[in-house]
Image 1 (cartoon, rainbow, N blue to C red):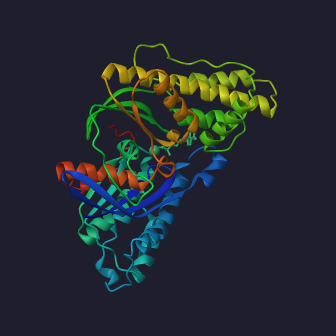
Image 2 (cartoon, rainbow, N blue to C red):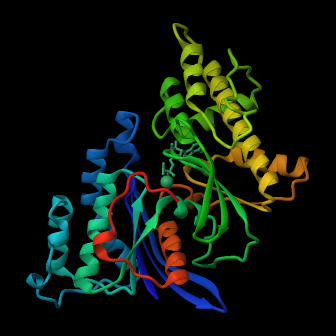
Image 3 (cartoon, rainbow, N blue to C red):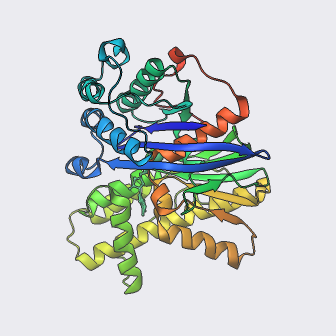
Length: 385
Ligand code: KG4
Ligand code: ZN
């Protein structure tokens, strides 16, 4: 079946078009188009995502992205429909999107998919609605089933695409453990089977990505801070520069699987208060921060794999782009002979994207073959797994 998937949970507008077919109970995917438009540079001036602007930008960028996706998938067709046959009611609250969609409809036919999948949450509700309302419009106008997908489940299954256009879901031994580390979440999820998740631990305050972003701001680095902090940390590591102060490893010895990262950020704030540090010293603070976060993530995750007997560890979410964290996980796995298979996403799949949403939605659909009532699909900021 041919599927369209849409992601707008934060500051990336993303669309994927792909084919899925089931062969000997295996799901196979063929990507026809996968595009991500990031607004990060626009939000950089605010040091974080500004929801109102993010919503407006999604509305402006959706149709140009949609047109490019249809070109990639060879599905763009000049108009043969009468424009006034279409009902744009779902777009009443999306003025930017409505306007560009009306222009689209003057020129092109709406393409027909077999299934549409859209992110329902968790995420920013105003931005989620842009994707959902667009998906509802398409679903109604072309009489196509629509299902909602969970953004965090998307980050879990983001590890499956390879560098090829064609990939399949490998057979893995359950239970699996997933460490999800993004700008909004830090959680350890036990996966009993696809669709059966148990959150065994989570952050009690800031998410890891959020802590990276806040520390970046304290160090005068730009948003999104993760890659910047990591670059500085790596420089300090190469040059063996000692940090001017050490940072705590919060909750590292607590017997549960919860995390807390706001204390590390506050310790950076106090450590830097009323002092002037050189660029080298700031790089060393970045290194100390990355070390602290990595140690806590590894300790809790390894303990969880031992407690639950999981052989496969999936690391997903924006912070899974962090090379140092991934290297350290591999190192500990080797040094302690843990025998874990560690799956991480390809670089292009670490951030928010529609392909991971499409995979999560397709796996859900093939498992249940259930289509939801359109009215029940809604933005849900805190949707959990
Ligand atoms: O998953 P994601 O794209 O969006 C959310 O769902 O939150 O994650 C974004 C987060 C940001 O906080 C960003 O700073 C962080 O991922 N991030 C990184 C790296 N690349 C992105 N954090 C640490 N190291 C990186 N290389
Ligand atoms: Zn995300």
